[in-house]
View 1: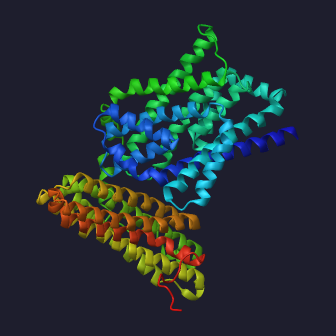
View 2: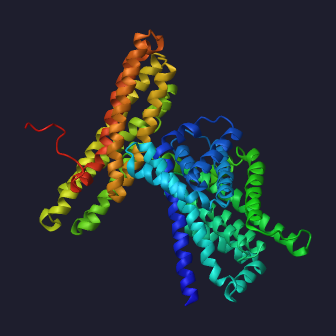
View 3: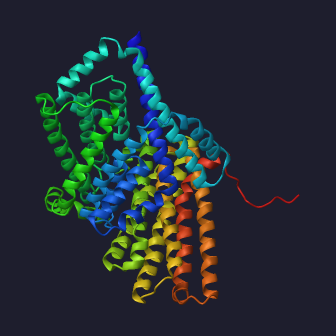
Length: 553
């Protein structure tokens, strides 16, 4: 009975820890995620890039999240292999710093964090204030979960079960390594897995040697997470997670054998305490960064051969490919048909995202080849709409039922909006990028910063739109609708500031006036189209009015 109670308590503490880490990361991504691309792509050497990765991992509390962001930017062509790998390696060290911070006994902060965070999240309407409240509550939940984890171990600490397991892991360090790798991969969080190991060592539930092997295994297992999550992405995106896995895995295995050999020979004494395990984790990742950083560029050749250029180019050769997510055989099953439509919409949304992502960079470079690629991708969005339209038209309404047919029509309506959003990028924004390059138009520093921030916020909304499409979550739909209003406000504010700069006689503003104002209109329209996914959910839950007009009394 005691074992069952222990397992339930351990599972509850672990799930709370995973939820809390995700809560903090979600709050940061929703509030500040739009600035990540600028931070990552602005680095011009591996040292600065690794520093950027370290900062991002501390902010996101996840090295896997940094690796996924880096892979996405590499796939879009805005990040080189060497820079990307340096960012990922820096992210590994940043994740270790997060564990150092969270390993301190900060239980006294919990009530304060919950009080301030709860008030901000529940009582304020400002987007960033609400998400900051989410972050504070997430940190509080992390501290609570660690306390629960310590308390869960108390009843069995003096039993015969735990010493037997701990002794076995200390003796068989290879098994301990594999257990740590599996734990990190299953939890999908190296922070959560290693915090658990640190807590177990800290309360003397397992010896330091076992905790060290578990920690090294967790480092190895966490490197598998981005490899797994990018398995369906293009070859250029998969190179970075695999390179990190090779480096991190090789160093973890080497360290495992060397350190355990030293401990067993008595050449070094076994330290005690969870803080020493945290220090070992920091030393492991810092040494990996120092050793691997000079070789970031050299590793590109082998990885290019492993993931061939043929795979890379296929991302731009999909114009005539079939709409794989839609199968006429699914029309006999409403659930399968709607699932296929949703998958195809997600693919379409990814295409529009890939078109929109390099817009600001193209205003600066005017790269004709990339502009042509973006325009070619618009044909893919058109083909996707055509396939969705034909599929929805073929739905047998009598067999589907009224609600399912209505849902299918809503998906078709959103597909139309996405196709129109693609047209805004291909026909208007790309034309403006060409004009800017051809006429050598220079924006004022403040004017271009306004456009950049607007672009970044819309990129964040694209990710949020994808989440709404997948989950049908009401809270996310409300947030996306609020973000649409925020984009309108930013567009109006930028227009007013631009006109004020004209009044002040700023030459750059005169030169770029037409392009600046047209870009603002195009960005606002693009965001309006991608935000439309929220409307059916808001209407269904009575959260959206049919009209904003005041009724005559």
